[in-house]
Length: 211
Image (cartoon, rainbow, N blue to C red; front, side):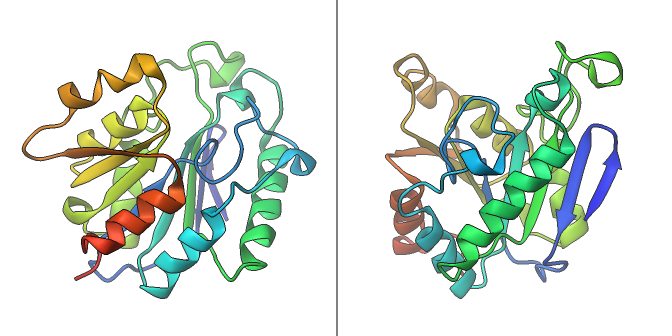
């Protein structure tokens, strides 16, 4: 585990993707239930089908990388110890179903943060692509064929800015559905799905992420 500075988290367990594409995942609302600032292990709940979906990617040797904004730390709702506890609970829950995450990147910086964490538009904070670009560089990921799955348009925007092939927006809020066509272009595909399990199944079925 490496914490690059006071507001960034970088944990890489799978160090070399050997030039393969990866699957980037937001965490809250995609892998685990979004409790609005999840900072306690006892509140962590793995979403139905998420573990099995990640296990399918593991079996196909598709690196799974979490990229998550964590402004709750900047706002003082919890700290990195709370984040670590949630991650350990998540890792244990995934292990129980034969799954694992290969790397985790998190950004705590926010414009409404306190003291040193009060930074607006930090390069790592989505919709900026910093977490994805850093993962690509440190893990030797082929970003141009990689994909992101998230539940907010800023996840898609980060993927597009990082040069990914596309992204899947989960259960988009009504006000965000209309933004999907505007974001998609010839270089970045945007799809929708009701859950991580459905999104991964569709990606595997059409052969994305696998040579």
